[in-house]
Image (cartoon, rainbow, N blue to C red; front, side, top):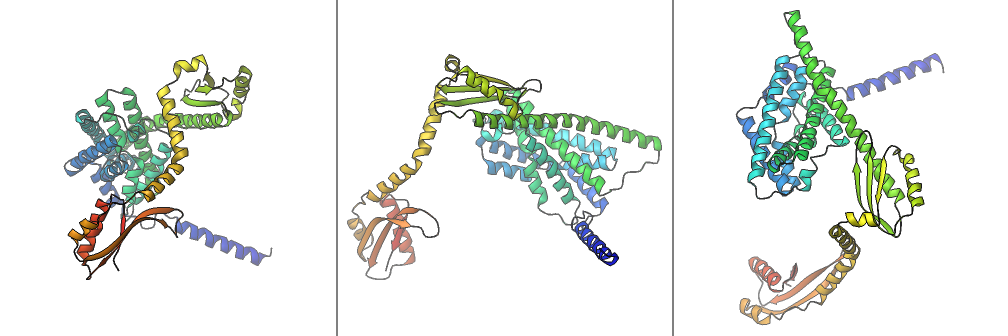
Length: 448
């Protein structure tokens, strides 16, 4: 390349680099630092309206978990003010404001205790005491919870530092899901289940710490001004206290996050191993239990059907290293061992579920055929009494072919003639009456 070509290439590279830098520049549209700090400080406080909003949100979330309603739980997370003190702690660490850190931690502790107490009270008085799937999912944190909390926290603090507030914060509140684990902890206290309580608090701790870390990272990236102290000794003391707080929060979270990642990898590998290696025509895995332990993981399988010979089991065990499960223990229960462990009601339910799934298409077709064959009652005398001006009618079940979407549907069509034009209100009443009288799902009324 000539010197002129090199020069043009360099200019083009600088233009592209500048364009990319401008597009991803977080300093654009950044709000005034004092305004951001003041806003987060105000949201860190729990008194008055903030406290009552928290209590109401906890009750709504508890009801949602109790009745297993995802929509209600999402609504509770939208009105929850829990993000405030967590971001306050992250901001305080980022700008070396020890008073803000203490205030955020104090208010977070108050909010946590109040939330658990209110949810425990609700679950103690509610007549519904069964743990639903929405509640159980908040007792075991996964690797994805760590990622969601971290990236959700990044989105949250970026939105907080903008001049114009957007709808990001409500989305972050939903994604990071701080409210449901606290309600689950309250359920655990009300039901006396220590395992649920530890799992829920564990998830809440993970979410809070990683939101705090992401807040700190963005604050430092945006180069918020650190708090200056007149006394150098005081500044060193504050920095030392903040370092201790960060270490206490971050070091356990790293350890816990490592455990979550390691457990998720083991469970994924174990699931793939089971799906690949236990494909037999006359033997089926009816129950599997994956026990994670950093020293020795365990895969416990319950088989039904033809017993697998020892050489087959040994061959399967020899392939565990291919799935990075060399250090895991494989426990297979079959034959007499399986009979002692089998829950026959579970097997029956599983078989019935498979049968219903296989026959669902056939049942749908039969139901449609029955609907077509269903005889419609004779309603001539009733129509004559209700609508004297009606001269004749025709009623029949028919099949409607859908043009834009695949499939067909059944429909009851009624064609009626009147001696004089029927009013709109009469048409509506007649359609409702026909649907009820003919005992059908839908009626298409045609009046020439």
